[in-house]
Image 1 (cartoon, rainbow, N blue to C red):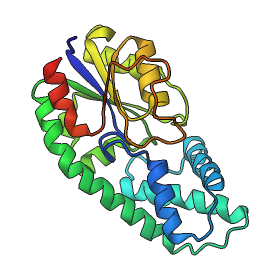
Image 2 (cartoon, rainbow, N blue to C red; image 1 turned 180 degrees about the vertical axis):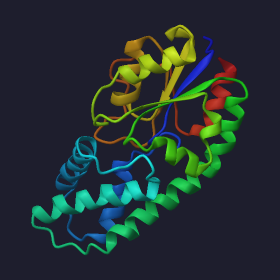
Image 3 (tube, helix red, strand yellow; image 1 turned 90 degrees about the vertical axis):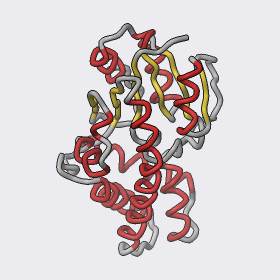
Image 4 (cartoon, one colour; image 1 turned 45 degrees about the vertical axis):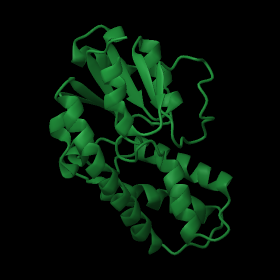
Length: 234
C-alpha cells in the first residue's frame, strides 16, 4: 500500500494527540464544577458547537485561546440555564489550561510535521470555526501544509466535502491519499467514503466506541508519533 499525499485532520489529532476536546473539557469541568452530570455536560458541549457554527461569534483573527473562551462561555450559559450555580471566573482558568495543553502537544507535533512534510504534501482538513489560519499562524505550523481546507459547519456532522476538496488540492487519485484523524465518525468514515486510505488515531474519542465497527480502517495508531514509521513501512 502506497500513499502519495496526506489529508491530516487538525482538531483532536495534531493539537491533542488523539484526545477529543469534549473529553478534555469534561475532565477540566469536573475539577471546577462539583456534581456536574456528564449527560448534561454532553448537551452543553453540543450546544456550544451549534452556537459557534450558527452565529458569527468567532472571528477570523481569533487565536485559539479566544476560541476556547467563547466555547466554554457558551457551555457555562447552557449549564446555568439548567440550574447549575457557576463561577464565571473559572472560564479563563479552564481556557488557559486547555490552551497550555495544546501548546505542549504542538511542540512535540511540530517535529513530526517537519519530517512528514519533507516527504509528502500535506493538506490540512478541519471542521473548524473560521479562524483556523490564525490558529496555525499563532502556533507556527502553517508552513508544513501545502493547503488548508476548513469547513465552518457544525463539526458534529459527517462531512465528505472537505475530504473531496482535500483530495482535489493534493492532485492525486483518492486511493493515493491517506487520511489521518482521531474521530471514526467525522474523519475515518467520510474519508473512506471518498475513497482514501485511512489511518485512525484511536486514543480518546467523544461519544464513540473506539471500535472499527465497519472494518474499514487501513491502520490504527495510538500516538501521532507512530505515523512517520507507519507511512515509511507502507
